[in-house]
Image 1: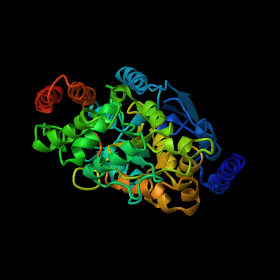
Image 2: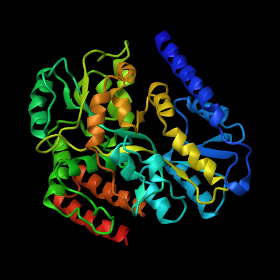
Image 3: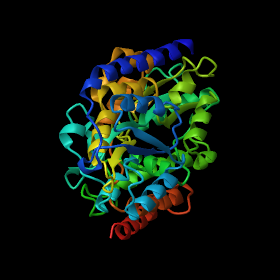
Length: 417
């Protein structure tokens, strides 16, 4: 812990030096007519506790254009509702918004976000999949800030090599049985957004999709989509995952793996911290790799955050400069080393100092380069509900996979109208 605190202090000190060196470039006095002035930044609950430290660097650089942090609920649904209520009222309460990547298309389609300069927030070092999430109708309406992809955690003390396909993973279940363990601690199979993530991963990994790239045509009624959903249904039918996993969200599935009684887990990289802690039952006994797929490496759903500038902001120039600064290497290093989040900048995944703190970064980069965004549509809420309801019915055994996909296709067609 002492070393970690020292590392954090060093990183912030380094950022302060950068801030000091650049202070001479800070803009002058603020005027609302020029789009320059104080701004607000609204995000979900800051679970890292480090966001104020990062924002202090901006405020030191820009004393006439300070950013005020507005911390919203931890619930993504509550955050989205707060933003929509404000935007529908054409209020300038939030200059910069912390948008889940699936909201960017929706907010842009309603005209609620200001267009951003791709040369400033979508450069060659930014992960292409992250740029994709922030793009709507060929224009960028978000600055990718942090990203994420799921990984397969496996007990490296029990299996010699990580599985690359679903069949290889199934074969390894015999090892779990021999050690009186559950094969698969699970993914996230409760009916919520996590289920959409996991179903999308299974269907994408089998070569299927939900909508066309422009979001205007339903494509899920296919043999590939049926094969993906069937894989998840079979995990329950064969007993490779416990029946209780039908209620699991992220933490419940993580707990099942951290107990030491499961061979595999699908989850986000954040589980690494608890799993590698010296008090963990599996410290030194696990590794992380890319998800397996039907015939080779699988496809993770892309998570993450885009920073959007409100179309109703009176200080849009400052807001646009701020989101570009949040994507700068100095800010992104704080994001990785202090906040323990995944950067959108490819170059940081091979940074020796960062890899030492988070050794899974090379595997995470591979997963991110192969990741798919969830369906891009202006009607995302209706789309994800159609996916969740029909997939959950199949996992519960209430309908067949064929019935679930047929109904999902019909519901998606209605959702995007």
